[in-house]
Image 1: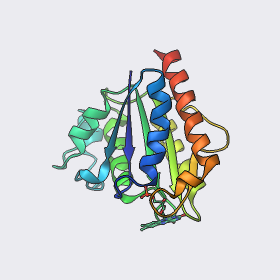
Image 2 (image 1 turned 120 degrees about the vertical axis):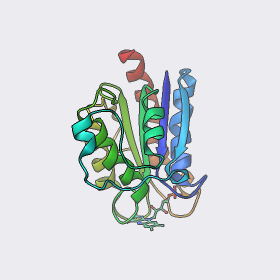
Image 3 (image 1 turned 45 degrees about the vertical axis):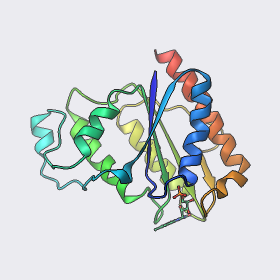
Length: 189
Ligand SMILES: Cc1cc2nc3c(=O)[nH]c(=O)nc-3n(C[C@H](O)[C@H](O)[C@H](O)COP(=O)(O)O)c2cc1C
């Protein structure tokens, strides 16, 4: 089984990366393969509201950028983790661009992540961690994915890179998410 994590941070090796690695450690213990993708390494434009994908239902966006290859890479996986730092009380723009287009392109097309496992986590400094997490969890449910929980919410507090290593409750929530995600993946297999 394979899980892919989309990291919405432009900062390589930062707090979001540490959070993802903490979840991955638990998944790897159960022999689940893991892969992290930095969305900032790709050109992903925001949706232009052309509505073509809703008519063609052919698993493609007509915009010419990196979205389609990334979507098809995602579809090869059994699980998805949406992981983002909080920017202006929300997920980062790059993450939101991907989600806008994923939602429409997959809405009526046969290729989608329905009934696969979806998880979300956020890192933040002062405010917006919880609404951002709710937003990502809501989207995963709206995409028809099966979402494992953990105690409280899956998020951690920290500002500079590495700061979340001091946030024990946050790291615990990531470990628990990894354990619950592995459990759910096995049940659904
Ligand atoms: C442009 C920008 C906007 C931010 N907005 C918020 C915010 O609204 N609330 C918050 O708590 N932290 C905010 N932060 C702080 C980041 O969420 C925080 O530093 C996080 O740990 C960064 O994760 P990373 O190391 O993975 O990039 C913002 C940071 C930047 C650069």
